[in-house]
Length: 205
Image (tube, rainbow, N blue to C red; front, side):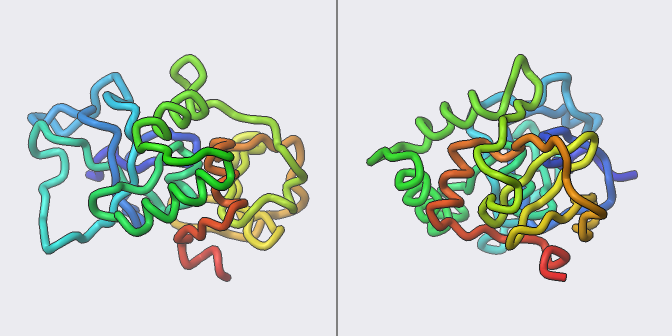
């Protein structure tokens, strides 16, 4: 039976056999003896996105009282949920993200914990996912942005919307109405400033 460790664009953590392209964590939020999640959904404001393979290291998922391994379809999904690149296993990507984040948000010499503080405020509303008004029409959002319309999440790529699922993306059926922004505004500005994220191959179909 699959573990409850797959993150959706809304930040929920669900059980599914799909694993996705990235792993990551929000601190320790599981019980090793049962490999089940605790009631809390984060224990640290540092929500990071990591590579699934690094230096040949192998971990048994949820096996110890270390960080809780979470999985994401792709980087757009992780960003929508409120995560950022890890400065340890993805240093080059993290530095690219920080540079774009600084340019997009008009700041200099930002530290990881300072970005985490901003992201934590932007991703949560009383413990639940915070949705934001769109700063521009859906078709003008930068590649990799994600929006929520009703119960569905959508990725924006080259002005078109693609519906998210656990297995990948499919072309949206019709116009997206009454959408709200899932991607934190500060991250959205980093995308507008030129950060290029990794998308699931289905987004290219």
